[in-house]
Image (cartoon, rainbow over all chains, first blue to last red):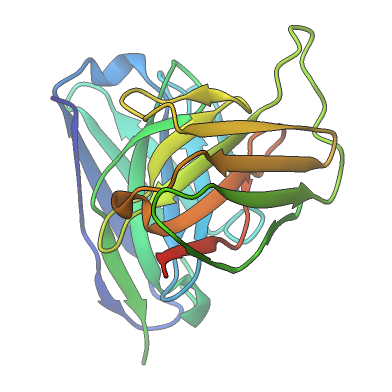
Length: 120
Length: 112
């Protein structure tokens, strides 16, 4: 079955960087767009970024544009989110989600998330 | 595009109908095929969000037919014809008409 497993979360100081990973299995990873979505404690989800199936296009939320970068390694079936200049408001549970198609159609399958805490 | 849901909390009786409203700050335009890219998600307690309804009115795989979506322009509705105990959780609408995709703030459905 389709499985997405996020990793790389942790506690990080403001201004520092962190990279999240998402391993996909049970499907042809290189054929689908992939998203990152985050959910701050007690809040609703916030869409963060998407990358097309081949990494040829990316889109970002305004709140992370210029600080976060989404990428993928289709050979190793992995998705990444490089997060720079982290702020307290980036504290959240970060999910990766598989799209239903090759670019950005809808988020069909979600992982369980990895927690990022930005605190001094 | 800002998405606003009402009510924020919805106590329901099993077997009774329920309805959640979602309003967008701008008209969600239809595609040439007449599709509106408005989705609904359900986040059950302790779980990740799961796709419930996509493209306004299509049920995701495995979703019971008691769930239905409708609307146009700026006003959208999720209806549950007969609420079941397993339907409790947080419901979110989300627009994907344009980037950035945006969610509503959620409606908490709980059993009375």
